[in-house]
Length: 254
Image (cartoon, rainbow, N blue to C red):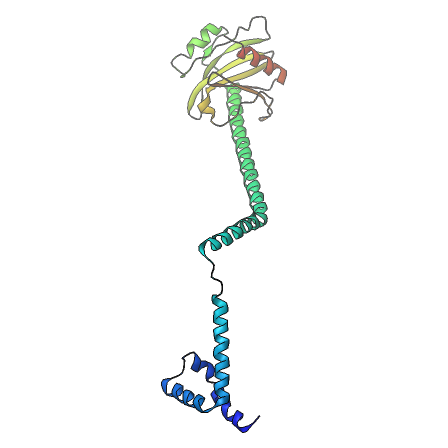
């Protein structure tokens, strides 16, 4: 490198700042005076000016209009949506399935607990009746005596079946309560067994689902059904077939 080139190194390092207008006034003046007297630095300065203009021109060669921007955004948006769906939809779908299954599981368990609680309460009332020295408040085998006795004592009416020529006999009845709502407890006898038939309004039973099936509640069989806004429960230690027969007689009454 020549002595002149070595002397211009300091000036060459300031050319970009000078061309961009970033030097102080005094320093810019000194560079300008040097360029007027140094052909090498002047040529380098011209080269850099041309390079900056070329870069600036390239940058301004294409300016996207609003329509072009809209097309680009429209073409990008669906891909993002599809990508998002591809990555997250399976996870969200799986989460929704878990939520639904969990809700159904909790609902099923709650219903089972409600049923178990009610059947346990009915079994307790049936046992209390069996153990009582006065199991009924109205004692009669005549349905036309027992049914009128409940008038004014419970907020509904019901019909009793004709039991002649059956294995069942009516013993009597009394008022019982379920969830603080009054209802009827009718006592029937078949051979040496007693059957309690409870009748309540549906609102007293709440969410409990009446089932025409045998249910174990403290070793008792149970039949239950709904009719005309009332819920019936027949409970006893007799076999399921006897309960089924009495239930059908009750359903067919009236």
